[in-house]
Picture: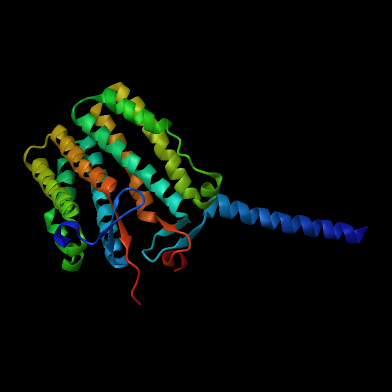
Length: 160
Length: 135
């Protein structure tokens, strides 16, 4: 009886350690390695990388559209562009989600939320406030690009 | 023809892949991150009406900073990419001058929108890939 209780505790400990490892990997660390340019390399498949880079180009195009509309004093267009981008939900598979570090996921989600906030500000009609908020939103872009890069799994760069 | 097309191949995502060495790729991507950081600071400063910061930030990424691109790398870049890159550096210089001389936030925002148009055009048309190492 005592022996089987000990065995049971051992199994529970092993399972708990495995669970902790999986939580750390899939929620916090993701599939990452240090990069030789001092950033963090997030390892993904070629298709996943293409999808994420396309998502980032959409951010860039939206920021360009917002800036152009702000220059023309067209804050209705700013509100529409920002609100639409805020509501957009990237098609991230659970497998890809597990590869992204928590910092990246947090910044991505915060960026969408900041676009939504910007939409509300634009409806208020203050172009200077739009500029300030857009500048603040772009800090997410600069900090993410400064810290992270996407590398395709299995390539030479992924095994450095 | 090489002058026009540079060292490029068609990419599966419909863009043109510019093939360079890994250090050259790092240099180009770092330069682009410099553009992004400058645009972020300029956007924030425009909202605050801070023309001094705009002039200072924009002039740091003007044409003078383009001289850091080695001649070997320049030869691998297609003409349109070089034209967009040079135009972007020039637009930053123009932005710095306008911030100093005119100081109108609306002109600043229009200039940044034009600058960003260069970024979106370039990102939609090109990607930079590293050639296989020879050793």
